[in-house]
Figure 1 (cartoon, rainbow, N blue to C red):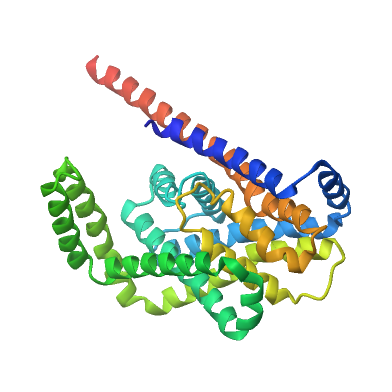
Figure 2 (cartoon, rainbow, N blue to C red; figure 1 turned 180 degrees about the horizontal axis):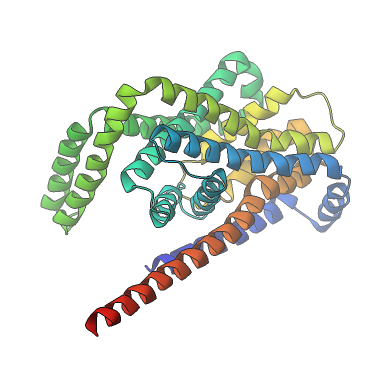
Length: 357
């Protein structure tokens, strides 16, 4: 399937699945009218703070990108790094399991003449610390507030466990690729060869080349992790703060309704658990399942009357607002990159004509 068609279909899913999910959660017309009434009671000031937290979340990754580029002796303006972050989150949110974000960031970094080796290394470190930070936050709160978290999670414990396992496997694979890329390459090639023998896959060489390219790009990452462990630990700390910025958006929604009784860190903990449960699922933006989990786990926090308006506001700010802004930034970046490429092509053509005279 053409990538543009695939992205378009994913965006449609992002629009319609949450609408259908929320409609199913509402139940009837009377409840819908109550939700609309409660929706309008949210304090605007707190919601503005929520939007600022979303921007801080994006800019935190930009700071990490700039920090790593500086460590690699590559000086790039922070504004350009913010561009990479918005593009990354936009593509992550419209692709299953957030698979499209980092390739898009590497592409646009290359357009800005940043070495692919540098950008690939940065994306590896960010991917590793982003997932590890989430698990550390989740594990911390499960240990500190175990009984309370079990109350919030309720019957969705199985989904949280599956999410933990998938995230652990992802981190383990990334870690193995970083520490032993050649070892992983050999295992991958053996698996591809076995699948080819039993005719599950046909083009064996195509998949072997993909494995070679991925694993070769991780060789430099392995050296970086070994030689700059202190830097990676600093980035992990920065990523924990980055994650908290986004999780805190729901707390701003909570305060916007003048509610009290649930501590700030309980709301952060619930959001972290939801993220662990849904982020690795093969759905663009984890659409549908995120809304379902939010309603299930936050009903005790917001109450039956406010939980759905809170869901719409929280998801709207932390997800759809980011998609809209990220989409605008991506379109502008694509337009500038295309115009720059066209200008170079015209210049090269003119130079060729001059040489032919």
